Length: 217
Image 1 (cartoon, rainbow, N blue to C red):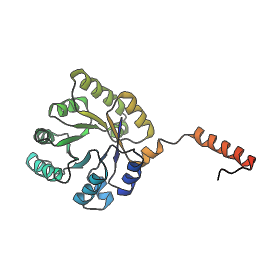
Image 2 (tube, rainbow, N blue to C red):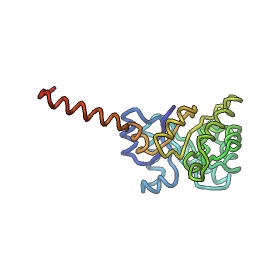
Image 3 (cartoon, one colour):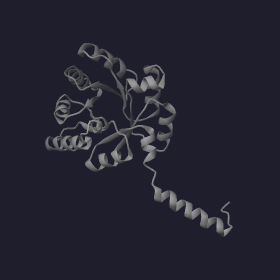
Image 4 (spheres, rainbow, N blue to C red):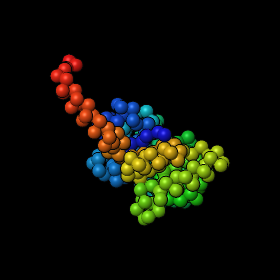
């Protein structure tokens, strides 16, 4: 499973990228606001840093303006993936941009039917939102399972990009189900390393080592 990092924080992306933990980046208007920087400037900097797709989202809601914004964002760098919402206008925009050779991430997916439409429209990625479904007492992982089965049934090339990930357990479940990609905030990816038995084992090793009175250097 590929790891995308869901942030516009340059320092966080750089740290994870240097560890080989970044296969791509996803941003959205909220993350751009949090970064406090110009969207074109920060997106260009991210795209120059990572080799994989960098999702930059349109903010228009009607097809004609979405298309203009999408084409403008796509010019920032060759690895830009234009992000559009899963609306009828978003699907129209996805179809045109995909036909032009631009990568498209269709976001805000909450049903298998929506994911099926996005695949038919030529989406590069479909972004089902796990955490937001969990928030309304619906198991977001069930949606990933449904999409995986549908896409495999008909050999759709659209990649499942598990989004709205809140925990390390979400990452594990997405990998088990077979999501192609998971995008998560930096703290969630970093949190995957943690386990209480690892901490306890390390503490025990260090105590025993101290008793030997030795030094390695």
